[in-house]
Length: 69
Image 1 (cartoon, helix red, strand yellow):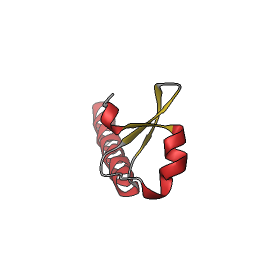
Image 2: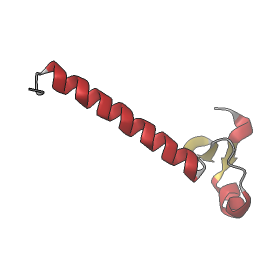
Image 3: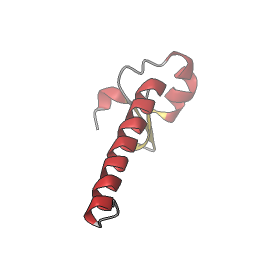
């Protein structure tokens, strides 16, 4: 965990309106990483990438079991 990008949940509550999310922010509870806060656009890019990977894998599995005829 990069302590430069780690803050407490209290910090998040107090500063949510002005967070710099150019890098993911790790939120800790009781000194342990609990959450990651990321920019919404970055989150959506990640979700799209995951969806593409899943679709590609589904296609490979379908081809493997000869589901395309």
